[in-house]
Image 1 (cartoon, helix red, strand yellow):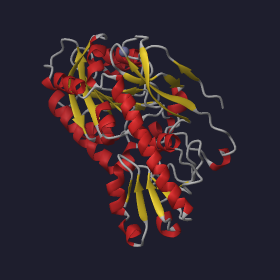
Image 2 (cartoon, protein in one colour; image 1 turned 180 degrees about the vertical axis):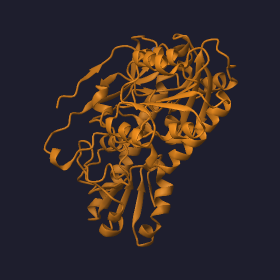
Image 3 (tube, protein in one colour; image 1 turned 90 degrees about the horizontal axis):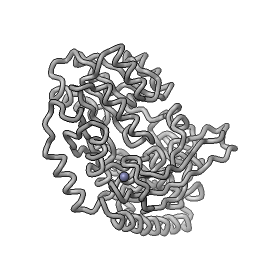
Image 4 (cartoon, helix red, strand yellow; image 1 turned 90 degrees about the vertical axis):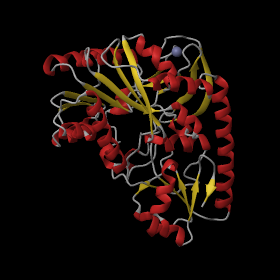
Length: 414
Ligand SMILES: [Zn+2]
């Protein structure tokens, strides 16, 4: 299968062509392109993973864009599988309704609605709900669970169709979607139509500040075209007749940002948090290329150290398993040069991924029963942001002499 891919030449937010390459990661296949056994003979294409800073608006981004149909039509991430996310979405729905829609018989729309987890909480509160998601199988599951879902990409045309049929929405949400789109301008035209004069649009994205401060370089992968910070977003929304009225730091995905947007001059006051976060971002240098080139060299040092640790373990004839096969493990393994010669298999709790093989490197993904059956000597925690809960859950492994290797934010063997 040929995967369509192109490199754009201007900034996704301000259209400036003044862009600087600030971090060049090793090219990888698509981070979620897990492979079934019968496809192992096919070589998977790799794509550049080059990170650019816009010299005009200071937005950090990938310019290489892979055909979104390849990325999303058979997407395997299911939000309802993680209890932490279910609770996060419950609180999220509650706070949005309390603040923006105290009378509950309103329309709420979730773009990138996945299995409908967030909408199920809006629905329980009495809202009319509608999901939009291009992932065919997952959207079908949501529908059978009672969440009406349009299987489609969100667009200005789709927004018009929704408004014609259901009226404007009081609350529109899009979580971990806003960093995934090449044509953000068209997306915002759709949002303007859908929220009308009185509605709000809330989005959650990984926050660039947390990525840099916490060493989350493995959040760089092709699905994430944009690495958002508040500074570049303020003028971007303004240029589309919208207004960023609040920006909150939240702790999902190792540190995220929730932005809330209304039509310019709409009913809500702009919170002081917007200007405060912009100021903080300047203070820590998110608008400077050196911040990212320094980050790249710090990551390089960690990679060297990790390779040394693994080389020593392998030279002693010990076995290494991986733990966690999130999308970001693809970036980590490619950039650090860790392949099937080091890691025999990867344990993952998601039934969607078990029995598949990792993108490009084709390491088998297996259930957690392998920890006790195969007894690896070392477990490299690829889902390292969950290291403490993984280690806690597998205390018997440590008690029987096994050791965990946590690669980031600095290499630890425990
Ligand atoms: Zn720009």
